[in-house]
Amino acid sequence: LKKWVLALCALSSSLLLVTIVAHSQNLQDALEQTLSVNVDLVLVNATVSDSQTGRPVTGMKGEHFEIYEDRVQQEIQYFSAEDVPLSVGIIFDVSGSMKDKMSVARDAAVTFLQTGSPQDEHFLVPFSGRAEITQDFTSDIARLQNQLIFTPAQGMTALYDAVYLGLEKVKEGRNPKKALLMITDGQDNRSRYTFRNVREYVRESDVQLYAIGIVDSLNSQLGLGRTGRGLIEELADVTGGRSFFPNSVFELEDITRRIAVELKNQYVIGYFSSNKDAEGKWRDIQVDVNPPR
Image (cartoon, rainbow, N blue to C red; front, side):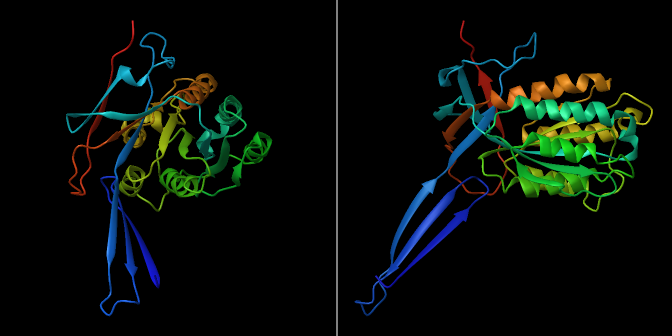
């Protein structure tokens, strides 16, 4: 065979089409042999929490779940409850309104890092009037902590730019499971990117966003209305993550620990979609739980 051409096409309905075309020089007319392989396995992260305590429920099996796509039940083909390493970006607000909260917020971020495993990797994106990566991927918590200590709180709030930058960076992570943790006390007032830009980008990214919006003081723009809070909630919901809005900074440490534990106790459910149409539309997925006695 003289030449092989390999084409890989990813469709929005999670359909991968691999086509191999072989050309033989021994035939006058080019002989084309095409092999098509459809790989449409859909993987869904799911967290089960106790309704009384909010703590993650472990020990569930595949038989305890049902999954639906556009209201049509799907057959579960893959199930995992393993604790896998994470690649996580810390999106940390260092704008002027965070000045009185920096110490507690910094300690809460360190608690999140310490609750993980040595195999996890993290990077840091502090943001005020602009966002930048000050610490690349590392498993050394001390390096991230030092960056936070020496970053002053000042300026405005480029929140959307920070999330966008975090989404771009986390793709480079070596671990398949990826997430962002954002800590902020205000709504955006400085970004080049718009909320719509970030929302569309986050929908196309296989990344969970966990957001903590501090609303405890008059300096917090999130406490003045539901506009900023609603946008943060929507971004987190779109990714399958969660948002938290504590009334006191002293709740931060408990929340970050809770997020870290939740990320480590998620189930992964996989199915082959019964809808084979590659129509390019978003599909609604619903997961139901039938808990054991």
